Image (cartoon, rainbow, N blue to C red):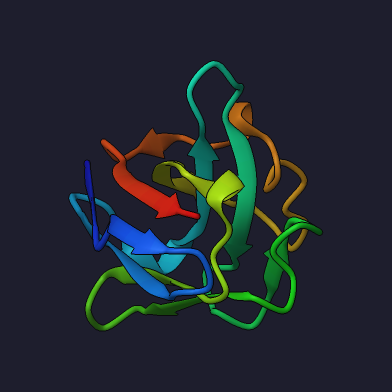
Length: 127
């Protein structure tokens, strides 16, 4: 399984970025997908997640209304549109895949709940 994140970069506060995560080696349409981030010296934290069908989306309170997660199962890709970025959101952003069994996705906000991780893409927001 490979998860290849891309789209990071250096932007100014208030700018937008769109991250992509291309998946291979798994049946993408059966996996819930999540985005997490980790700033230097801090723990990895949940940002957003989307159910296998795309019908369910979930966000950290800190990004609600500014970030949008989406997926294209035909392209095996999940996206994270980030608007109005803040300097404190400078971090490495990781995508992750979780094989969800049944209708309840209990671990979607937890690092330990995911089966596979990508290598991350750096997002730097300057003030």
